[in-house]
Length: 399
Image (tube, rainbow, N blue to C red; front, side):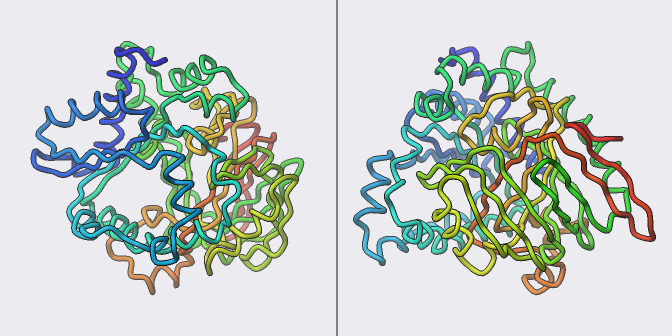
């Protein structure tokens, strides 16, 4: 279990993440939504007190239990699946920040639900998520999220509760005398790598491993982002590519839990930017339904690399937040099917209209699904004007 002292430090790190995610910072009177699962209540309480002391208006909301969520997707009518609570737009229009504490009591309770029903709710909620995206683009909103250990996470990860908790403590630097100081150091070191990457005139990236042979095209006006406070922990450096330039084979050797389903060994073949072939060692039918969710779910929204020198995560954690930041022996590469991140635009994201996003190849979808490869790999950048440069090999950036 996380002791009160560790919870207090965890709350400090979450506030650092929240404040870092919004460069303008927070002022007394700003509105911050704190969402949490029941098992994360103690961490939510610690965070609540610290935000309140800063003059923030805290809006606490507990998420659905697994029983409630199952009953909803099992028994809701079409109208109920698409229902949006009155006041949601007003709330989102006036939010300055949000924190989500993930602590589910089940990861598999929705395994028998038709993914189309879950997708229907996701699609109905997308316009409201878009409100927060626009507010973030304008610098008016920031967010972060984290994981609180649960027995269910440990079970699905094949770890004991103690082992799972230790991964959380280690990854978030909660045993450090000053965890926030550690995160600031990581932030500064990552900035040097991002500046190096963003200065390269890259035409495309070639990712090669035992089972991956993929070309990703960053496109015009892109920049690498990452370690920006949005996720605790976060060690990845990522951009949202021009989806139209994706070609080749991607393989996720790391398992993934999504919507109650466990998938393993996902293999995707891209042609002209779209998924042309799908296979999986487990959960293939579910993967196919995710890829067919909407017009953007078969295209790339993210390309990411994690340096093992930053990340101390070396176990599968059955949670994307940790798994997409896996360090281990070889670091990781991951791609996401679905929606793009407009903050990887190298100008002012607030200037991006929907038409301009489409012109630049930013993808739009109700889906965003990270699929992780932890194999030994190398990534080579093809440079505009000729030549190439190794940028990543065996888990480390080559700068």
